[in-house]
Image (cartoon, rainbow, N blue to C red; front, top):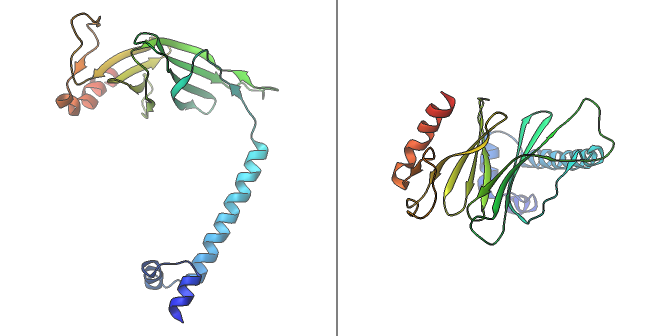
Length: 198
């Protein structure tokens, strides 16, 4: 009879034992969870009704990777990576939207604040969280892991490339962009912290 009771409550034996050790009856936990789920659904429905579209984003090329970042409560940044055939034709763009004091009557387009070429299509893009505000780090992946520094003064600059091999002699490379071997990847966070956040 006890096993059937637990089965009807959709609880496994381990969960029941943990709850009994904490002196909580299983049905109280289940009712609490259902109540929380119901509250969560109602909150989501109310939030959807209150949500308003602030901005729109359109590109001339297919977007393969993107990453959103809230620089502050009213400043929104979106990193976009294109997917185009050809090594030098792909783009990495930063688009921003800054909320004004008055609420917009209709969605406004995101403004392009940075646009650089990206070798090969980027499969992923991600902002690196940091409490320091000198510049913001963005990473993208493709044939290599690339780290970018973005701020209002220097725009978007490639600061490091983590690759399995060094560029061929025929490929152009900038002297100030270090190409790191995989074995040296453990030193990368310390190097970036010293050079760009010191």
